[in-house]
Image 1 (tube, rainbow, N blue to C red):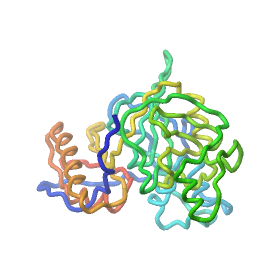
Image 2 (image 1 turned 90 degrees about the vertical axis):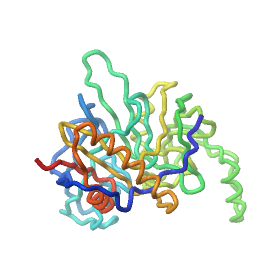
Image 3 (image 1 turned 120 degrees about the vertical axis):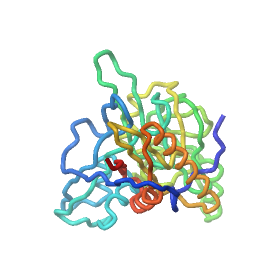
Image 4 (image 1 turned 135 degrees about the horizontal axis):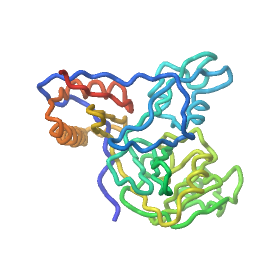
Length: 320
């Protein structure tokens, strides 16, 4: 059964705390990824994977070109580089690639889609002697009024070069504009499903490619999960039918690793009446983690830091 809870909003406002905490953000370093694009070895312990790094823009590249090359979505690249022009970063401009992630608090089994994060995680089965890994890719999800559903489902079918049958809502919108929507859109450059589609057990919902890749990392679909063409092709080749898919909405993540508490929050659409409940959820998460190490946390400082840098992982190192 699908989880009918409303979409969480941005972790914002002031949470009360009494003791002090040294808070530092993880600085990006200039380096290249050693693993294939979007692939990371699973940590033996903890949830932290990857690390941020910087690249240098060329004269012809847009910020979106750079984001796609490094498996980053629209919101992620904008939030990591707020002062860099979207269309003309400029030759020689350093661009931060936010390639560090806290794994969601969800089963490390099959596919996990974190709606708040606009990101998909895939935990493939590995053979004997292979390093356990996770693959993670940016996604586009449902816009307002077409929310991507939550809950646990499974993959049921994989289609290469699928045809698209516009739903009633598309035909109605076209009629309102005085246009006529086609009954079917065959494979090709005009097909919004792209070349690869993975059907879910939830009727009418798919993980698929797109003919508009600039929308990856945004809330712009009618509820389906969109991916860059090269990412969905890689997933298509790797994911078996009957793979579990966990659709979650986790705007606040926190975990201990190597004696340090890491936290991450995401800028999701704010709904004032939900703000308190989401602050309380974040507080409960941190209280549980705090108890594991018997340390205290300045929640007001944490809230201010995460609101100032949505999506950025912060390390919380207690004073000695």
